[in-house]
Image (cartoon, rainbow, N blue to C red; front, side, top):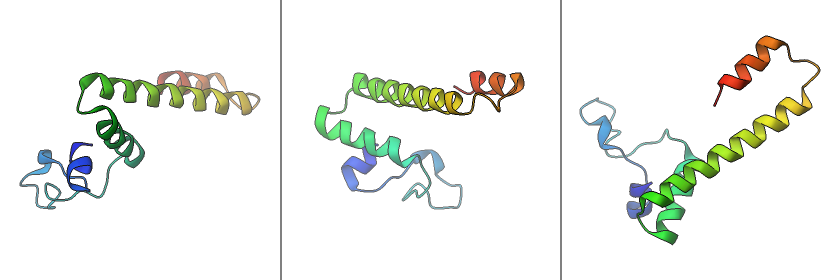
Length: 89
């Protein structure tokens, strides 16, 4: 999030010396989450509370979409499927 906001692309110092040059530029990441973080940094600044709120909002949206999915496919789900859905988050 920080590098996208500062330099316009994502990179990670976690991948130094792994041979893929991902410490310079990274192409695989959760794009919507990182874009939301970069937008939050540009609007609210680099604050820990802002990162927590972005994570919470993404979690709530995920739970809501999961609930809608289960509601639509209620007839075809077995008890094993419900267990898997409950343990996903």
